[in-house]
Length: 162
Image (cartoon, rainbow, N blue to C red):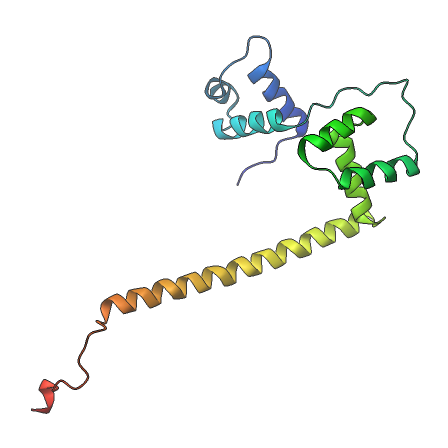
């Protein structure tokens, strides 16, 4: 069983991989005992995250009405148009996504969201099992079809009848 690593530990390992005097994931794996695949995945995840810089302190916090307006306008846009719009508004994509998720949660408590996630995960697991069973039945059907020739003559004499 794998042990969970803290976010701080992961960040430290990523810094070792990209910082000054960076080392390879394989070398860092040998030094720390953490699997090279984990280190590489953490590095890839870190590179895929949007850059979250410190927010301009002089910028005042957005009001609820401003957030609603930005979310409504942003919902109509996609890709580069959305990025350009958010840049004009002075909003990071990560912040926009947080607002969108909070709106979708409709004021539910975090525990309700966690319960909903667990429920969806159970449903997904059940459906995956059903799909695996259906796939196994299809494979079995094909195997049987290969073993039993389709071109058997039904009106041919059975040698045991003679």
